[in-house]
Image 1 (cartoon, helix red, strand yellow):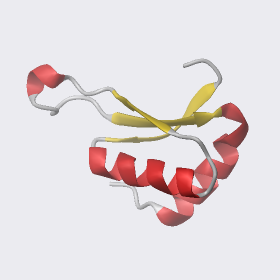
Image 2 (cartoon, rainbow, N blue to C red; image 1 turned 60 degrees about the horizontal axis):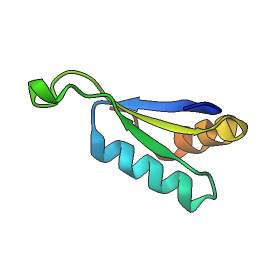
Image 3 (spheres, rainbow, N blue to C red; image 1 turned 180 degrees about the vertical axis):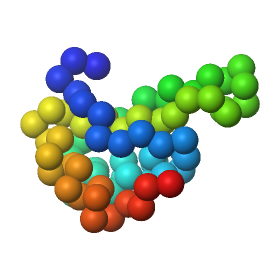
Image 4 (tube, rainbow, N blue to C red; image 1 turned 135 degrees about the vertical axis):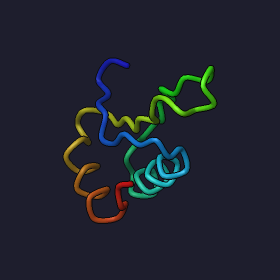
Length: 70
């Protein structure tokens, strides 16, 4: 996705959804890219949370204070 940048990677899809919801509640558009390999029952890969490049710093600061990494 052009003009979007990753602010979080996690193997936990629920954690990615929580992060996306938190960002959106704070006025930051966010999407989740599922980069898991479905052939292996989601053992390999991760979910990636992306935001527009102009919100990267704000998103990272917000996530650092609100979401505990796995």
